[in-house]
Image (cartoon, one colour):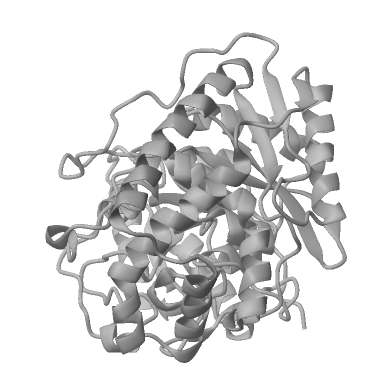
Length: 467
């Protein structure tokens, strides 16, 4: 077994105990990158020279007997939309190709503090605003399982990198599914953390502020191949930064819930089409948990359809007043077409309606929290349909179908809740998959359930890109 095939937990142990060096680990992952990345274009900036230098420093620290952090020497990737000092935060946008970050964003700083070595930057669509990863600056990322369908977005580069063994941890972020959807499309694990769990801002833009929807919904999170690595990455990424007023200093492990833990599963999501393979995946996840002692029932949480509508009302109004004019000036044709279709299908609202939507969101969150007192876990499909074909969102009809499939992915961001995407079953070349949602700050419950499902389904192993 080569070092690039190990998960982060085992690779960190091998480096810590001297059975492998950081230089060997980084060299192995870089060799894998050079072998598979040309076929998928997941990593769009390779940091080989710096990574090898950092690995040498890491090995010297171990030789001197220094205390080693949890990810010491482990190769990881970061997404092009977060600040990494000395590199462009280009966000897949041509006019931003020379927008150089002067300091690290907290999540990047936290990965470095944990000892991780960043070997590359992963691709995203222009302004990270599609579930397709394609832009005029870096080109298109392909799904290694089936290049005809999307690798997901906006963290599609991260998901494809993890699936093919380009590092065991890939950073991503999520406001409408951008960690969970790439995890689903590429058949890996993806953790959308809850509101304020990981400090989240770009120093290059922090002084200008963000729309309220992004403040409430946008979070950072990891892609991994094992659930235990998602837990490890979360602990590393969640180190505090008091400049982010939202960051919560709360334990990673919450109070044990009443046993047996009750799970509400939602195989068929109200408000649109649900593909039979995704329906079956949710029910199969429920069977895995039931076999492990969970109590599982098909129960609908409150007002799912209205929750989806509220996500659109809040986010589309934010975008129309802020990002849309910038997208028209700086974005690429497909990004503009995709956003234009969204704005046509879901109209921006006036100020009273926008404020009313935010108020209604608060009431819906109360109803969900009340529901979760009885049902601490909720399982839905990650998307209600199979991954769409590449560039399916650049026509109005295509975008309508994409947004219909995204229904279940919008609930966790709207409510600020964590969601863990894990593969369950398969359909042709692709893995099917579910997301496990819990109350705020209860990522531990998602991860515990994810490990049960993983034990039944088998651990994800790296794949070679499909031809």
